[in-house]
Length: 150
Image (cartoon, rainbow, N blue to C red):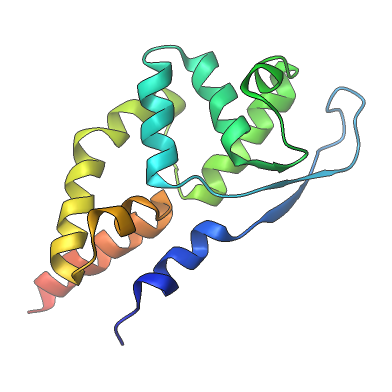
């Protein structure tokens, strides 16, 4: 069954309510986050370069739907809360790699994956870049398995 571009992109629009763990700086409650798209991750990696703290703040700022924070506000969050939020953003976005490999993941392999998917499934690079990392990795895996079976 072939999926449409709209079906693929639907996952990037999902919002998830995440309950803060006890001990989050005395806070209790929940926040709403969305998965990062390839475009988000590429912008973050480009803006942050080798600054992991800036990258974490930008990830939180981009993914946090409610309450919305500026990049500066996200950078001022308590370290433990920020780490929890980044871990949740990574999990929901399908990024299961150490933070220091984020830029490495985004550059060459991810760009290559975008073009492979665009070629394999007939999607435009813009459609692929709007997908979450998890979606891209899943379709790259599916594409690779199809080649093994054939």
